Image: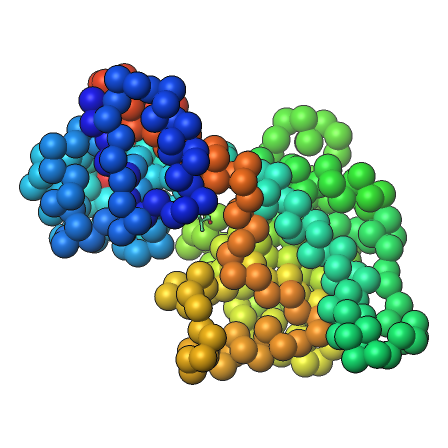
Length: 331
Ligand code: COI
């Protein structure tokens, strides 16, 4: 069998080589380039492709790949919102993703950033750099004194809950799909109760019609004063302008933002020496009580290794006509 991989970064190469070494009967070839109508021809002769990109998998791209006789495609990440599913179905594509590569990567990032917000770390760091070594007024809040409201209790949400409990916080949770174990332990409350009771609100849900801009002027008004908002899941969940209003008014104590509704084409790019493309983002980056990271919560050695290994396992299953571990519903 022959598998061709697109968009392979330097940090992924060791894991790709590890997989190839353990599958000597499979020919693995790869490029740093992304899958586009122009690069699709590179997959000629392959039985399947392994891909990751924030670019769209457009009808044209999928057609170009199908023209090479390749319709078995394995994503190295979880999100599938950038695939033209109607076209994929029409062309008979079989697709897999990696829904669980390291919940800890994302949950730990959320926890670290939450703790930093509570200790006013960014402000303190700036003071120290400037030679101001006074304590006051940069006083911290302890995690154990917080009620932490977790919205979305999938793999990531549950790890985040455990970490916060490790620090001694009281954790409450909301999800439309209730985990029976968590339900037995009495974690679940309504979304309105989360807003009313939580000092820290952390989002761990996908971007769906029902969740886009779920954090807006109205829901922020329901929150406690000095609440901390944490979004390491999907940018569109948050109405960024509403959050800025709440930061300006002092309603929100802080904001952890690893994902941003306008991030595509901006995050994971180098803007040094160039005109920064987004004034609103620039404003957020420079606030003491906002911690912006460019969608890096997932980016750990553990996660990247699993993304690569699991995607190749999935693709080999597709190529062999076996049931892959995590197929994506096409259509
Ligand atoms: C995903 O896996 O969908 C992510 O959000 C991480 C991605 C940027 C690799």
